[in-house]
Length: 75
Ligand SMILES: [Zn+2]
Image (cartoon, rainbow, N blue to C red; front, side, top):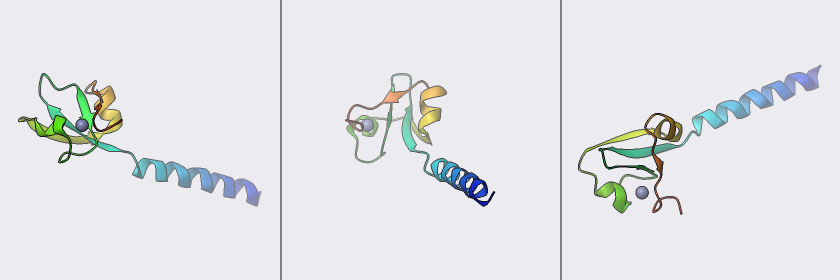
């Protein structure tokens, strides 16, 4: 019984850990922007953005905004 509880606690703990660790990415809100970026300061792609820059989760960037990973940030 104790073992089962420990397993459950471990699984829940890992789940929380994953959620907290969910990656944030930066996206440029422009009609021509297609990629999300790892940082907002070091990438050429997002530096060229002169629109609003949003910080969202990677999941949002992909599912909601249909962005793909930036080739410069994610090599
Ligand atoms: Zn980038």
